[in-house]
Length: 443
Ligand SMILES: Cc1ncc(COP(=O)(O)O)c(C=O)c1O
Image 1 (tube, rainbow, N blue to C red):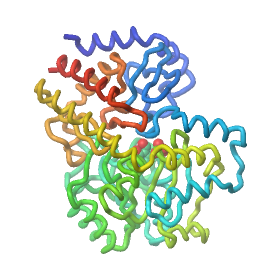
Image 2 (cartoon, rainbow, N blue to C red; image 1 turned 135 degrees about the vertical axis):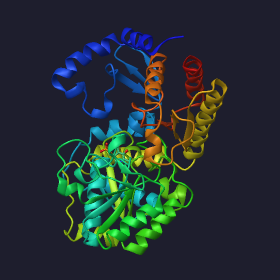
Image 3 (cartoon, rainbow, N blue to C red; image 1 turned 120 degrees about the vertical axis):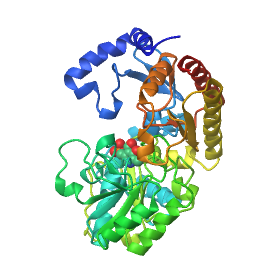
C-alpha cells in the first residue's frame, strides 16, 4: 500500500522539470499560475503540448486528459479540422475592430442552437454573465439578483457571493447568508445578491416574496458544475421558470459549462426548459477565448438602444469566431452527443462498480459527458450536503491519478471530468483501470 505522503514523493520525482519552472513562475506570477484555480499542492505540472485526448508535461509524461481546461475543450485538443481552419485564419488578420462575416455566421449558429433571437460575443464566461445580468437589470428596472449557494458564475462582484462559503458561517440551510468571496467586494454589491439553496423552490419563492418587484433575475447553472456534477431534482428548473413568470424576473441559464456539452442545445434542450437569457463560453470557443450571451430581441434591445452597455475591443475576434464556427458546424454536431454521453455513462458506471467492489465511501455521478466522484455515499443535492464529504481522500486520488498518467477531472474536488469529441473507449478503459488500482489502495 502507498500512503499519500509516498504518492507526493513519487509526484515530486516525476515532475522535476515542472518544479524548476514553478520556481521561476512563482517569482513573476502569484502562486506561479495565471488563474488561482490552476494551483494545487505541492505545485502544478507545467504543460508542454496537447493533442487529441492527451497532454504532455515538461518532463515528457503523457496524461489522458479528462479536465480539458475545466471542460472548455469539448472539441478535444488540436482537432485536425480546427488546426486547419485556424492556420488559414491566422494569415488573414487576427483583429479588425470592424464587423466581419465570421461573427455573423457564429451568431447565426448560436442563435439557432440555443433558441435566442440575438447574441453578443464576449471573451469569457465571466463577461457573459456580467453583461447578461446588466441587461436583465436594465430590462426589468430592478437591481437585485438571486443566485444559488455553491454556484459559480465568474469573477465579477455581483456573483462572487456564496460560491464556497465555509461551513460554520453559512447560516440556516433554508436561508443561506450571502457571503463575499474574499476581500474587495463592496457591501453595496453583496446586498444586491440574494442567495438560495439549490433544489429548494420554496426557499426561492420566500425570497421573491420578501423582495417583491426587486429581483431582476435568477441566475443558475442548470447543472451545478462548480460543486462536481449536481443535478436538479425533477421539476426544479420548471418551478424556477414558473416563479420567474409569476414575479416578473428573468431566468438566466449560465450554460458556460453545459452549453454545447450536455446536449447539442445545452441544458435547455436536455431539460426542456426555456430560459430568458443564456450565457455561454468554454465549448463554443473550440479552445479559443470566446463567450456569448443571448436572449429574445426585446431583451437584447436594451443593448441596441444603448440603454445597457456592451462593448469590447476583442469581442468577436476573428480567430475565436472562426473556432466557434468550426466547433459548432463541424465538430460538435448532433451525432457527437450520443457518443460522448455513452462514454460518460460508461465512466460513471465503471467507477460505481469499482466503488462497490472495494466498499469505498464514494459515488460517481454523470450527466452526459460530464461526471465526477463524490467522496460521500450519496450524491449531494445542495451545497450543504456537498460540503459534507472527505476532501482529503480526493487529494490522495488526485495525486495517484497524476502519478499514473491520468488527469481525472479539472483540479480540485469541486470539478468534473469531460469526455470530448476526440476521446475513445480506450481512454475510458485507461481511466477505469487506474481507478481500480487507486480504489484498491484507498480501501
Ligand atoms: C458556470 C460558469 N460560469 C462562468 C464561469 C466563468 O468563466 P470564465 O472563466 O471564462 O470567465 C465559469 C468558469 O468556470 C463557470 O463554470
